[in-house]
Length: 387
Image (cartoon, rainbow, N blue to C red; front, side, top):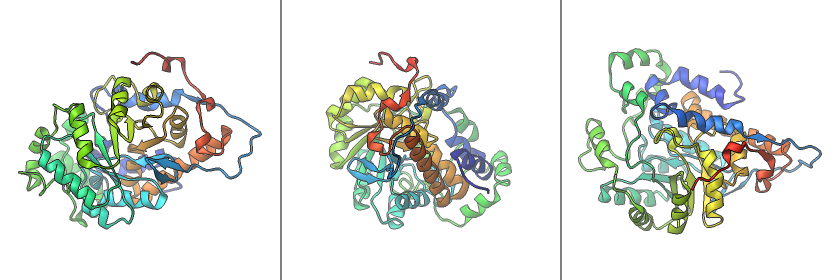
């Protein structure tokens, strides 16, 4: 496979190895994909100030996210269908995160269940929920997460309705994949992936099938999903879910100053500035452009993190410099998982950490806690009134 020196190396292997349906699921946005593209291009527009003659011995990227020690300000974001990118994918990603020293977040729409991941890891992980209509199911889902000793709940607040993702519709995305002439032809070129899948019993949505009312097999899942999300979600409902959990809560999907202030007032432990990786409202601003106005609006009332568009350690450094206490990565570790399983996720984390560490040093900082906006040159278009 060659030496892995950047996330792009893993992406190339991933594309060759995983069926098109699941590659497209990760590597796409909604509608025209404008926001999906700008999530990364806006990072590229921010430049770093190189500094010299500064003592760079004893550098550290270690910090905390919601009171938990982390090797760098990064957590693995909740991503659905990881077990379709690589057999038992959620378990592999969780193990890699645990060994590296960063949090892993399990998606409700995972292939491996909460119990599967808990049985195969030794440290608490985080669990993500959507706001669903079925309150009884949500209550049981949260209780299962508590029983598994999950240390924080991530509530996704930007998915009341599902953004239209053209590629998923055209590919007929499903888990396990539906056998059509096109999907069979494509999977015939992905033999190693197929052999891995034959070796696992985990091919369905482990947190849902057999747990949600009326969902006893995968054939009934699609209709359940279409009706499951709660379009009537409001702040009262979010507060109700926070109280139902009773522990640390992170609200994911904040992209507006007013919403950020409200989330802070509600008592969230952290908020994630996110546009769902460009998979919801196409035409919305990139997460990195909205980060600083939100940080300025909420001050120290709540931890502010960001996701969407991070592909390098320099991106992590830029987010930190603009005020993010932490970041979440999604696609970057999916590339590694699909390419090489657990080892690939470890490769992703090692690459990001090395880029973060060296870039921090070349900007004249030796501790992540000392990184600030002074290391950046930010385009004028990033300034403005976003309220």
